[in-house]
Length: 448
Image 1 (tube, helix red, strand yellow):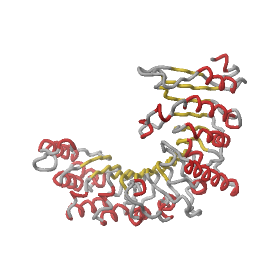
Image 2 (cartoon, rainbow, N blue to C red; image 1 turned 30 degrees about the horizontal axis):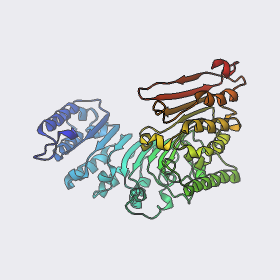
Image 3 (tube, rainbow, N blue to C red; image 1 turned 180 degrees about the vertical axis):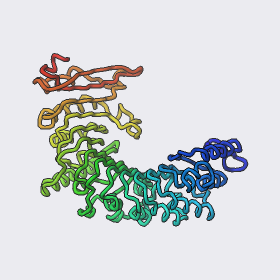
Image 4 (spheres, one colour; image 1 turned 90 degrees about the vertical axis):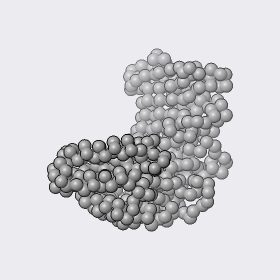
């Protein structure tokens, strides 16, 4: 149903929208090979029609498998407001979830309403579903540890999971809540899928910055881990739990802060030293990572001591450029991309004259200085995408030849591979995209 098609006089969707939903149900009843369904309902009438459709074993689709669409679906996306679930509807949906024995991909929107509201029987039915391999859930309630622990009781063995949590109260500037129990770490909560899980993405899964999860829990098949707005990192937790990890994305609220006071910088330094020391003392780290994405500060706090083939860093502030050298000297990337802000975040809307005055030449200086040592020993391509929108207004002046002289000297010796590009454009200013790579058998100065 169209969210904009609500009837303000009678509540719920307008008659025309309800009629379209009914006609769609008639069409679905004839789809004998239907295996994937994504549906949003906005009225009790629609919910009743949907449940009737799924239960109908006499329709063409239902006869095809003998169990109604419940038995045919392999993928289901469901968005049902809890306000529509009276006792009868909730019980029908609970029975329906138990009958979905072949659903392998399940997407539940507004999970806090659907599973963690006043219908605990629905949550029990969800955890009992046997065949789920890919799970996507939004608005999982974080504040109540018992609710998040329900994920630990899943009967299904997951291959991939994408979980978006309601933010901890400490981020809402309303009140504070106690630190979460240590067993709320993703390593602990998803331990039932340790033998099968390959990919985990989460948002706002805050973890204790001072307590390691159970070190005996290991995910041998895990390859991709992306934690957005996670807690301050304890790197050894991930090294132990995910020994064969290939891709790591990691971001914290602290790492994406638009400003860093002296106490914050001290905390970043302490976290970096602690994580580096833990790897050195234990003699354990990853052999290498194929790719890392995050902010410079987050990678710095992780303190990774292993090589990383590809690194994409989102730069926030120039005064933390001192972090480049320790980060790159360990990672020694083959491909390094630097972007000034991360698309889709508040950083895209910063007042650049205030926050990034003269930032570009400083960033370039810090990067090129770091790459003159071990940090550049394996580098094959450097891609810098820096916004110089205020050059045309005279707010920032960048001496491009002075910036370029460092990479020219850096790459004076013949190295394997590629190109240099410098492009300007844009109606209000200049966009500088600098991509450097070492040419086969030629000096970079010749290419320039």
